[in-house]
Structure formats: structure tokens, C-alpha cells
Length: 26
Image (cartoon, rainbow, N blue to C red; front, side, top):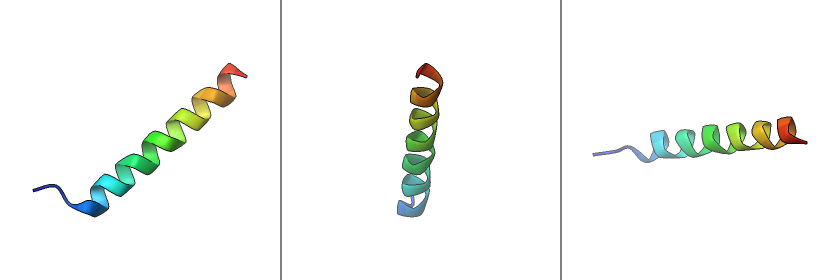
């Protein structure tokens, strides 16, 4: 069973990576 905390942390990491990618593109 997946823990909700791990899912939240994973989502935060994904958001951070996406934001950094956008910054790099711009």
C-alpha cells in the first residue's frame, strides 16, 4: 500500500522539477 505522505512528496518533487525545466527553457 502506498503511503499518502510519499505520494505528496513525489508530487512536490515533480512540481519542482517541472518549474525548474520551465525556468531553463525561458
